[in-house]
Structures are given as C-alpha cells and as structure tokens.
Length: 207
Image (cartoon, rainbow, N blue to C red; front, side, top):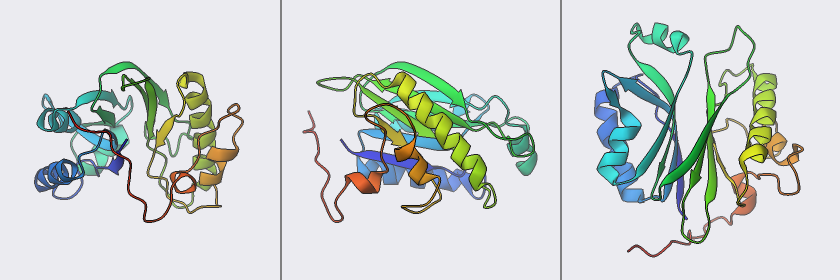
C-alpha cells in the first residue's frame, strides 16, 4: 500500500497555480491512500473533492468547525479549511476529532478517521493537523495523546495508518508520545521505525 500525507498550505501563496502542481505530483506518485491537511473549500468547490475526481479516488472530507482565525489571515470569510482522505477504495465509515488546544491557540484543527474497504480486510486510516507554533510543544503533546485515544477507539482492523506532518524528529516529543501512549497492545508507531531506508514500497497490482 502506497500512502502519501500532504499539508496543502490552504489558500496561502499562489494557490491557483499550486493546485495543478499538487495534482501532477499525486498523479505521478499514484498513491493508494492520501491524508490531506489544510484543504480549502469555497464557492461550492473543494480541493480534495476536485483531486479525487481527477485521480478517480474516493474522498472523505471534514471541515473545521472554527475557521475564523484562518479566514482573518487571508481576509476572506468565505473559505473553509479542513482535513481529507483520498482512497483507492470506498470509505465505509468516518469520524472526526477536534484536537484540544487552549483558547489562545485553538484554530479548529482536526483529526479525521476513515475506514477503507481495502481488499482482504478494511483499513482504519487517520490524518491529523497538529498545532504548528514553535513554542507549542506541550499543546502538540496533548493533541497526540488525544489522537492516540481516538485511534484506539476506532481501530478494529489493524494495522492502523496514522498520517500527520508532525514537526519533530525521532526520539523527541510529540512523536515519541505516539508510540508510548497507552492505546492498547498495538500502539501506532512513527513511520520511520517501521521502514527501511532506501526500500521500495510493496505495491498492490493494478487492475
């Protein structure tokens, strides 16, 4: 299974040109599952839904319930933000967790769960958008603990596939918290501890 996770940088910068570049990269990578953060939604158009249509993938979308801080940064209160999962297989179940944050840092970030009807057995997949401020390591640690509980509550077909662009390095919090949180006998692990440098992903044969 080939998995991609990508923070799309919402409507910051040259977003009109960037959408075509995003599509080109995903088309070249040919992933089975994609976890997306900072997806924009505006005027009846949604970037994740558009990508799914162009790539012939299924889509699960979760809008932030509190996008106001994001909208003020670009001066447009008509643009939504959220997480999405794109999948080669149908999404049979979904759930959303609003990640905890103190009021001064809470900008409506989410974790999204999607249960994918993959061949052989269903796959529970998660994508999360953690607080990014450099000084907010303690907040990220709390968000990761909440994410671990969320994964444990919905993980019924191991292995789980957490997806989040966490800004830390192996051995440091909050990444270490994912593997050490009390989430049952099979806690999720950081991707680098489950892979071999230079290895080639095992691919499912295409129909």
